[in-house]
Image 1 (cartoon, helix red, strand yellow):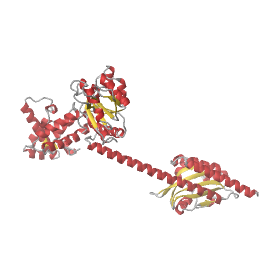
Image 2 (cartoon, rainbow, N blue to C red):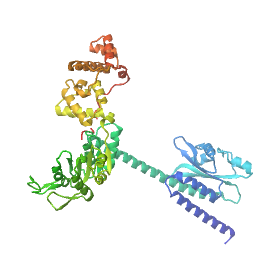
Image 3 (cartoon, rainbow, N blue to C red):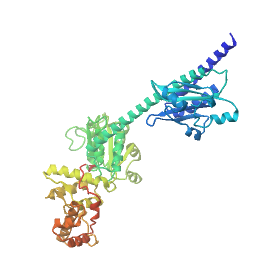
Length: 534
């Protein structure tokens, strides 16, 4: 074997080893940002390069910029910008053909935008060769891979072109895979968002109505836990909608077609609750004239909702704990074990932690129930939900009572929004049912709302006597409605009410009404949109 043949064989072995290592490097990650810098460093060390760059084409601007580089500072990289067809790199990308510049100092097409090559030539008195190959996906050129090396007569640049072209092809395949991976991730993300949106829509149609971020958070938790069989503990004040959340979890779970059995643990006497939960045999106690299934058996393969779980007696808590642990129990008066497949949802408005400290609630049962807690904030902390809920109840009782209420006047809206709502959504529903029944002109006025929502005058002095209060409220509402209808124009509102502008001004001052707020925007008087009572 001749010396040249041996030299060619050694070069081929080095190239194959380099290509293998490049392939392994590109296969490590679809994120090219993690591999391009090690790739260029590998080329520099194994091919004797001074510098290496990957330049990418921006399709929108037609500009080429250095995406990654070895041997260039960040300032030098920032200067490396070309238009399509400009300089050697721009021509390579435009034509899709590789190019070699043997001596960069002698080629006028070589622009040296990074200002590094001619500086190095002047300093080291050595010529630099520049090799640039296109990076192509199919017939489309997306960028270029280039390398600098010291000029030498005995180095075949054609071999460098061949090797860099292979590496550029591998790099293009990695870009294609990355794009495909990004498209797949994007498609999966879009599909996930679509499914989330559909589920939230289903939940909203399930009377979980409102616009607040607090409600959205509850809905997202429902979405997360519904597909599982995890036990859920729903917490919140009375009337916030715990039963509706339980229904939403069941209806969006794989058990949706199976029974959903509800029981209020506080509504039944202690001597009956055990029979209600687990059933009894004939003659188990006085009055047990026939065998009867309990709620757990009724809920087999479905869901059982235990409302007011904090009111269970200690003896019943022990039996419930066994069901949660073993999924089995015995009916009263029977020794036969009944196995059930039931998902348990529980709710309470009491502090179970306080009950545990007082020895009234078992700690082991608490931890069995509290696997996935959901807290529903009170209505006073969900102000954006008040008006959609009020409008929903108007629609509900319009249909039930054959009424035609169309809107809520501004004064009534203010009363609704500013009320503390100690009874939460249940109290709001009762208020709106009453108001719909009382409304006679298609509008709910402030005086249609319960006395607990009525306000004193702006001066802070409460009016005496029922008639005086009603007249005061009615006048305030009529003025407010007129200003709202005429977008804060006092003269037009006065004419509509048959008042002089002077009298209108006095009445506005008396009631503390600000006409400017009606000039700034139209007040929404109802938006059909319940995290309802439960």
